[in-house]
Length: 214
View 1 (cartoon, rainbow, N blue to C red):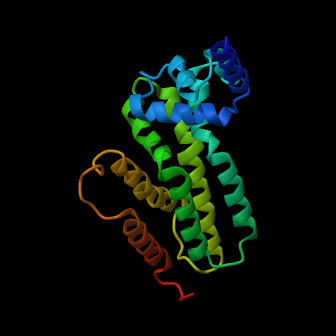
View 2: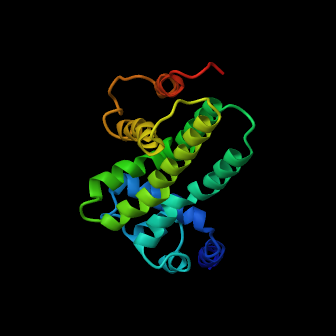
């Protein structure tokens, strides 16, 4: 009886689990097993809840994947947009902060493995690829375009095609994410901190070429 009561108590408590607990469990499983092989039953079990609890928040695996992708990004995007509107420092410093924050929020840790997952399964699950592109890549590129345009308007960056440059700035970040979740495991390479430092210096040197030093 005690064990049965304890089980009911735990189940009642877990029924009120926050969606973030479910998305955290889903992220782990998507990275470990892939999108196709991950079942909602598995996600519920990993989170320690019954499957019905999961359906209180997410009506499909695609909806759950959407939440996994967006969970950490929406608050960060609001912060980045506010920082862009109110930033008093130089545009090179702003670009450096945005890139490092993007890496911290999107690129590092398990979240960085989602890009590899999306690329490997995009052919069979194009909706997931579109979700990731719209929530992560497109939003990041829009932010980078705005930062570069700011620098041009202030005379801190030379005149460039902001759309092309935003894609060029984004590409090495995405490639690093893929590397760290594939070949980077067990293969000697440049440490991420050094990689990002050198990448930023090259990027900023190119953008400032022909402009007066800040």
